[in-house]
Image (cartoon, rainbow over the protein chains, first blue to last red):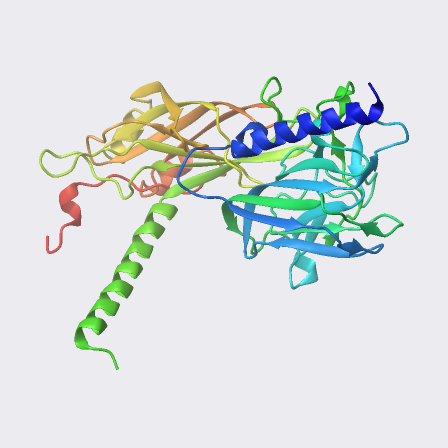
Length: 229
Length: 196
């Protein structure tokens, strides 16, 4: 079987799995301990942004959600061009970075840090299109790859979500690239949440991968077993 | 500009909204809170926010034909940094009751111990222990058990508090330091009548 044919079959299988998962409302993905999914009549707020033909120069920022003055819980699906986390790695990182926190009109109340991202290899077609999940907020996992001073903890309270080009090259998105933000609940007012800022950590996202042989990058808080994350 | 009926309707709507807001505020504030710091297994500092009170505050004691007196102990468990609800905790409540301060001085032991506070179905982070408050007076609770944090760290908790209208000497003696705010003491259903 040729590589091209194998890849096609993987893509078809991956698309089928993704379709089934989305048809079940994302519950099969929400098995992290801090995502307390419940049945009920409240319909989540969903924002789906197609990124096709969007170009981000080095340093460009593309805000994709702002829930101010309330901080929220939610789930993010990111489809992006990608590259290995390190040379030869089978875990991929998006070329664009995903940051979250609170961008206040006053700089000292601003907190912005990278979000922990989960790479979903079986629905990805690296390096053209990789699928990532993120949980808002993630109370336990590091999102930042900064070492030492300047490293921020993942934002505990989130109103703002944005894509940033932290690479040295222009990023050009294609028709398979998008970001989908599913907001499930409002937890409170952001007023007074952050002070003595601005607190900003613009580093590439920490990538977690539950499906490779390396279990040091599994992250914390997932329930494991069948059903996925 | 508006007809008389329209004006009355608008006034009634505004008044109803104000009344509803006031009653909801009462519910929201008639609880006490304690923050419990702990260290995750990976060394990071975190904190639990534990809120204690009764359902349907203000509470009144049961009286036949007037008031059922159903006011379960209500506990809300959240991650203090993110405000995310924490489910799956194993919580117990020891229950105390005194008619007055003299009764407290005479015997400060619990009336019931290790009553389970179970998770409320479909409401992650909310726990309650069902009960009917039988008499007006000072109710106090010791909450103890284990909370499993999101990463799997098991956090033992143990604190106690008496209702907020108890004498200051009782509260300073009984309450765990750091317990802020409070839940209301239980009154006779007839105490709230107007004109009395």
